[in-house]
Structures are given as structure tokens and as C-alpha cells.
Length: 287
Image (cartoon, rainbow, N blue to C red; front, side, top):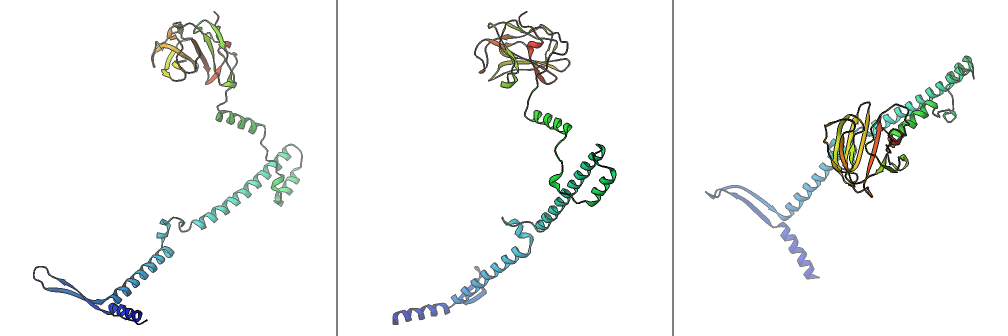
């Protein structure tokens, strides 16, 4: 017990020991500055400094915009802006419902379902159940939505040969695979021997002539009246991008290039006004 009490006294004495810190000129050894302190002063000063830092940090976070740079805090006024926008949204919804009600009642007047007096009386009340409004799209709306959906889903419509076109067959052979938009086969496959000349169906300009992994050597020609012809799986291309070609002019040599092929043939596509059409409706490959 005495040993423990002695250690405590020694610790307290060490806390009260005085130390002096001197700042001396290294050249003249002249004393410039001195500090007299003990360990207890150091502990008290360190504690007060840490407390001051904590208080300062708390004040900065609580009362200054600096807190917005800390993850989890929102910008000042953001909540009030959100509430204001919510109120405006509710107001717009109510205005939309009122306009819908107005248009619905106006339709009834035009269809002789209600009189103008009833229209004014119902509208002036401005009391209605939004669930009873007939907001279903009309015929024109449905047609427009259907057209947009088809464009977004890249659906294609088959175009019949209602126009008069006089195309030269690119090759002569047997059509082994026909035109089928259901499986996205937008052309026909004509069986051929390797080395058969492939001809342009009409006058035009080459807009693509290159090799791809799926279709091999492919050439695409744009013709007048927004008509495009496509020739795939060739062994060799005879024309380059930008070349002008004449109807019946050889533009490629048939082959079996590309991964999506099972034998020598020509895959031919015909697009009119950006829509794929069945080439058989326009071209006789048996001539």
C-alpha cells in the first residue's frame, strides 16, 4: 500500500516539475526567448486546444454552408425548394384534371349529349371525381402511339409492288430463302456458283463497300427515288465507295464470305423509302 502511495506521489511530483525551453542564437549563443512550464501545463493546454477545435468544427458544420461539402448534408434551402416544387406539381395536376373535365364536357356538348346550360352549370361547380373522367386516348391518339411504338421497336412493314419499277436482276438463280420480316430476314438468298458476276439493278452510287464478320464482302448502292440495294456474301468487290455504277454493270463476284452463310449464294435486299420490301415482288430472278 505504501509502495502504491509512493508511486502516486512521484507521479504528481513529475507533473509539477518545472522545465525551461530556451531559444538561443546559434552564432552568438544569446538567449532570445524562454518558456517555463511543467507537464501539467502541457496537458491542460493540449486539452483546451482540442476542446476549442471540437467547438469550432461544430459551429462551422451547424451554422455555415461548409456543411454542404460533407456527404449526407443537403444544400441550404433545398428542402424549401422541394416543398415549393411539390406544391406547384399538385397545382398543375389539379389544373390538368380541370382542363380534362372541361374538354370532356365540351365533347358532350358537340355530340348533343348535354345542353350548353348543363355544360355551364357542371363546369361552374368545379366539383368532380377525377376517377370518372374519360381520359382514354382517341382514335387519332391510338394511331399516333402505334406509329411511335413501331419506330421505337424498329418494326418494319412490308411494302407491296404498287409502283412501276424496272430493275435488272442482279443474278439469275433459284431463291432458296425468301423474304421474312418475322425473323428479320429482309431479303432473299439466291443460290449461285462461286465466281458469278453480281450486277447493279439500276443506276446509282456506291455508299458502302467493305467486309464484315457476319455478311462478308458487302456492297450497298443508292439509286434514285430513295431506293437502296444491298448485296452480301460476295467473294470480291469490284467497286468502291463513291463510284457511279450503271444498270447491269458488274459490281462484285459472288462467293461464300461471312459467318452467316452456309454455301455459295447472294443475299440481296431491296429498300424503298427506308422500308425493306420483298425483292421477288419487283425482280424476276429466273430470267
